[in-house]
Length: 368
Image (cartoon, rainbow, N blue to C red; front, side, top):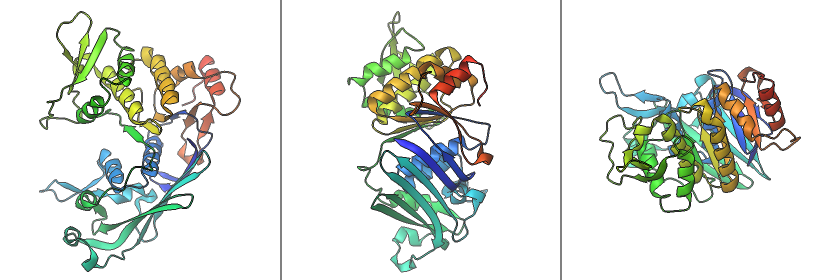
């Protein structure tokens, strides 16, 4: 597990630390304090700086470079957004360092002068117009190092063609990582994950999660023929049907509302992250305060069972107070549950242990 995390010149964080991390960690703080950036830093670190993950992280925020006003194709990601101060000058760098149980992981990124002779580039890369610099990514753990060099275009971006046509590195040695955004998972992601769980022991776990909101749910299944048809697929809730007590016909899961979809995404992502890390942006999205204690119990129990470390963000007082239901009032060190208040100007997160979470909830103390 990650026990501490340090970010240097990553996004909005010039130098920031989180200490005494536990099994379940809730990040709180004001808008634009950098909570989501911390989730992204963990994601990129555990992916060993894989370029496809960098593309995904920037694309989620719409941080792309548009071709022109006439041609609105987003063919490049806006690389500078990952660097503090948005600088892509030669020598600009960022670093993410995690101290884990018995070892450290470090991801470094640096802008260097390009050493790619044009004639040595693959044909598809020679067709692009590159600037004078390249992005050098280095992942380190012990004596192991992995390096990636990516040419930067004259617009300051990384071309999607370069990322698509490069062979991804093997994932065998990486910890599994699941990332749930504020809009949850796409229908395609849900149906894909669900297909691997149905008729396996974890199917009962999914049903347990959904029954937090609706105890009448008996079964669920993906629709193998589901297609988004390109219509708002990123925000739709299709591809899954459920069977409820008292209804002969199956129901589309979208009928049940946002909370059911959020819990399904949480449950599926916990299973996918087995032995690794689950990252959840605004974990309480779509959930009524009355179900949050059960949600946290489900997350905590499953995280222990599947050996998953959880990092989540919230703006909700109901969410963090519900976390006290799985916190112990007599723990003195090595908390399984922590709240980390992100105050960018202080350089280090304010950490609340399980005991402090319980006391704050009982005394109605605001810790966000």
